[in-house]
Image (tube, rainbow, N blue to C red):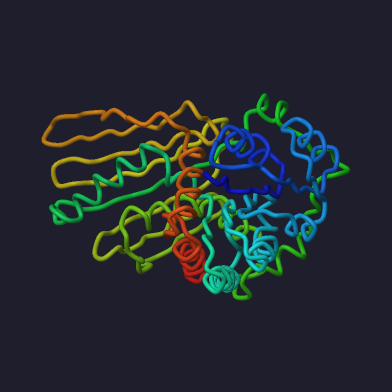
Length: 346
């Protein structure tokens, strides 16, 4: 069987310590080329994985014989890099968020559709086995006992991104070769209607909480109406209406090494609760709790594979079968639209 030729752009934590090891053991693919501005990391990684085509220039990288690109660049570069990849007619898996505004997201989808490409956004939480099991439970309830659902909520309080020991192990950039973050340039990608004092908050929100927005749309399979938005210096609360099912989304940050991230559906006779796994912890599969008719249960989570691995398998399968991914660009751009609509209400 002909192998899929893959190139990776961005050799930070996700590119180097997630996608490269997963791809290197996948017999369906051949890693042909790497691209990163950090020459030290680039050439050491190429040597480690025996990849000889290593580029600091994206145009040179895209001229190599690759079919697929995995993009794990800093989030503010996703739009610019994705546009070049899709125009070069390469299938693309890009880390979230796909863009910082809906107009740019829509543009990327249009390019992908014009060139008949598989374009997928890396919402790896969708592929978490616990999420897939809860999705099936909620989908069944929406079909068969919708009237039993009275309310739902999603909460995400982020702790520190990585424990100190994780940072020490995986910090591969020195101060001299980090990708340049120019606040003024990044702010140009933020929608014009966002007030100046809210721009940094919007940037943080679209970067960090697009996962939760995506999960809500995934669970309820509808585009919601926004009922209200409340924000202060510590939290943002959005009340959404998914076809007469009221859902609240509450988000903020806490000074903790842990993240508090869960989703809960309240029923007339109980609840269904999902605790999402800690990020980048391949051994934490999350937890499902079901309480109905005064009985509580904790369904076994059957799949043991890491969400990143399942996501990658899905992407490659979509390329082989030419089918739309679960987290396609076309579906994912509606997350950006909903985030913009939430901020219009602030």
